[in-house]
Image 1 (cartoon, rainbow, N blue to C red):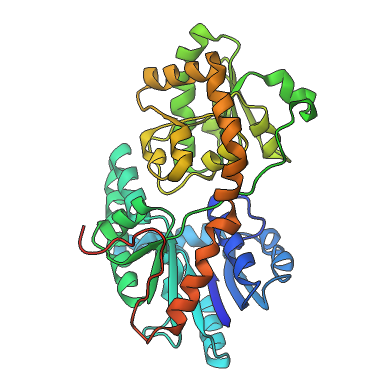
Image 2 (image 1 turned 180 degrees about the vertical axis):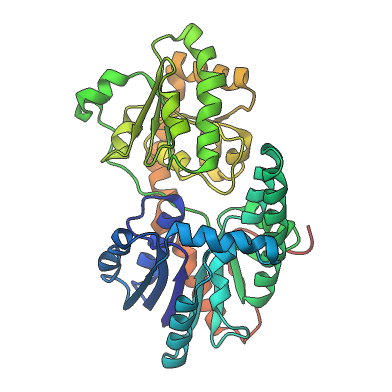
Length: 415
């Protein structure tokens, strides 16, 4: 089968959640199908990832789109009814490249990753179409609007409303729509989209936890609560700020030796300033994040703003590390993994849950005992096993008819 795959970000290196899911989809599909990838890169240096992608894609077209140019286009949303997220990726060059490919090649399937890339596909499309929204981005902007001061609250609410309408339009135009969690399916398009498939994220398992192999630097930091993520992303910034300012001080009353490690690339000035607080360590980019996960006493996901599944939660679970998180990201975790989570929202409750983990060895024992089976059930290979069936089903079905083969129920009807 010949697939045209469009992605808003070059998926190599797979060092962010959105890029990781895309990378594994491409790698999985390439085992059976021929793939032509069209995507954007933020810089010429990032575009060099094309070389690695050529190992499993027949063709790779990368257009460098600098953030400055993207934001300049997005600013035009105030004069238009098009979402800023879509304007950011608007490109005559990409549009022409995709049109040329569709004219010169006979594709069996067009696979679009992220709603912003749907603008490059003509309607009606010349082949079967699938779109992976990953998250309900309209719901994310709605969350932003509730926590931001005016006028940003108004801008965020406007973007959420425009995106919700745009998501509904895409669902109607594409043969199959996919999201990462059941909650995203419920929230997509403002909660009024039907027939959405759920394809959950997987996780790459680290090496088996072996404390003596940890570096002296990491051992010197123990015991620590760990947060992993890209640290120029607003929900991550809000989460670590919340923990450092409102939860950690409560913990250090009873556990003065406990540190809070913020591990991840591109920490903003706001994040770096947190390192001035007693017990807070900001590492920036690290070579092997799994070493920090292996050495953690507890992994935390204290999100007040969250959309979709948090890969950092899955990574901790398969490493046998106890996880304490707020209720919103907890909703995205399903199956046996959910039973291992400690969920709390208020600062005092979150601190109390972490104390349970620190003071009672049974919590770490439960996490370590479950890690082996979770490495199998949460692996990318297991999670993506449905993807090929979905692809074959939609390609073989009559044009315009959606055929669902999900193990989990597909939401339907108006919500």
